[in-house]
Image (tube, rainbow, N blue to C red; front, side):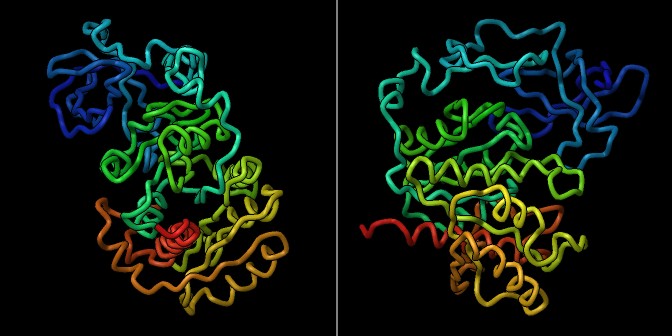
Length: 359
């Protein structure tokens, strides 16, 4: 159920593409809380504005999504001045929720890209790096390097608004663009499915390489199947159906305190070993940390029945990761706190770049 509150904006904090962080005093309480407003949806808040809040994630203490979320500015509702080309479309995201967003679908009839995508049916061998966590995005990008045009396809397993991600906002200058697929929205282009999103990345954004991962956060119950990142396996099938080259970024950790995520995470094993019905290049950096090498190799023997195991030298990847334009963080751990995780993602990016034709 939604946990409702109302309050008053007392301070404007930081902001980034599509989002504004606020301090809000809740009615009947003297303490302020941290709230987030998606400005394309609710407008630009000002100090003194009344706000209607959903405080569920905040009260649950969620790490990634621990904000009160602004549902509306009741006395300052946005008008037609917020309208842009996306508002002329017919693609409904976050469907049949009170904050459903009507966007311009990249391939719908009114789109300037309709003619291109009506005929598009092939990724032309484009390498597509697949990761189950949003935190892999900057690490994969670091491994790819600065030459190729890289697009990001954000799926809807985590945050639905692309605007939630400060990482994505900071990476925009380094990307050819972002496509939001499924129920996710707020990218440069809006797609109905992963399939149409991949084609848009290739034929509209002109990507040489595309990275596919869910938005920040995820839904997980701690069971084999109850994790939104399992959809990575379905994305492998989509890439191969469309004539791309699937490159799997394995979730490898020597620091996660949970045994099911040590070595190769059980989520990667499920996604690639059970859900993906077509082959991918599964990338492993070499050398592996001695603390997990045996466990990783044991898992790879199982995954090799369907996939190609690619070993990528890690030389220079640490320097590339440390030069990332955004901080690296996964599950509260930075680069040094979970080095194997980020190294594996960067190695996947390096392998994807190696598949491109020589300039």
